[in-house]
Length: 358
Image (cartoon, rainbow, N blue to C red; front, side, top):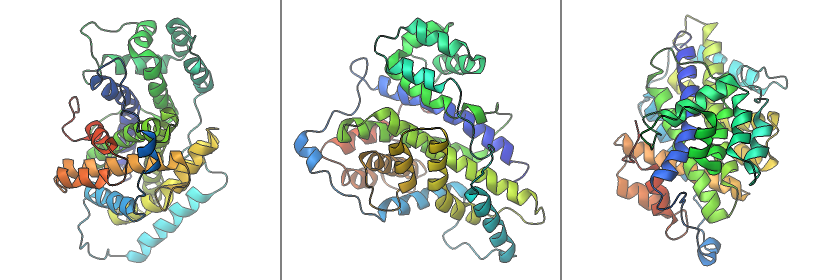
């Protein structure tokens, strides 16, 4: 893991960056108008929104992670189990430190507050937003790359300027692409194949943020942008847990990295670490609270419910994609947790055969 970890982390963070652009693209490609999300649930449907079985999301999440890590159901006890337990204790201690380093809690991009303020201003022009983005060369390159990529491009002509990109994407699209800026401080250009796990976590995070945003807007009548940020930060926290685990193993090179230990650490550390990142970046208390809940029990806020539904949709979608679950069963499971028509619409957003996936 020590040799592979920088590649996995850099490829995954780059994918997360592109993932925010995908959130905009998937919404637009399926739209009948310029923007079309899941149709809002009627008040009666909203009031009758069913409660999710508290054990459902943890079970589906673990099935996805076990498949992504290649863990067999009857995995044997590892040799030197005590050594791996020490690695786990080390990772837990590092991630629980009050003075956690920027290696595990990246610094918030300094342009983020300006970007959010401008995008939330309905009178802000493409030129004014473009001027802010253009002051950061890396952000400029990333936005143009997303706008012109084969996956997200929806017009023949290449987008060559920030102003044009903002015009093409629109304010709502920029709101979603801003999410990508949150992981920018820890992004490094990918220098190789990040491996199967990084690819699976990217796909999972993308679907989670998409579905959470749509659920927040259509069912909870909450800000979809906050829900999308929560989904992306949860994925980012998973990357940081992976990084901390790889760092710990790098000091014990006689031990082969244990996927089973990483699975345990992902489940135990991700919610709290994601919430810490949200607080360090001065995001809203609702975002931090939703992340801290982490699908471990009955969600107490609308945003937490949207994140829970988004993650369930992501897990079900990935299990279907891997051939581990029938689509009809997945759709039934998702539909049982949301009002009326919402399950079908959410499934269209995250389904494995969605057009444009790579």
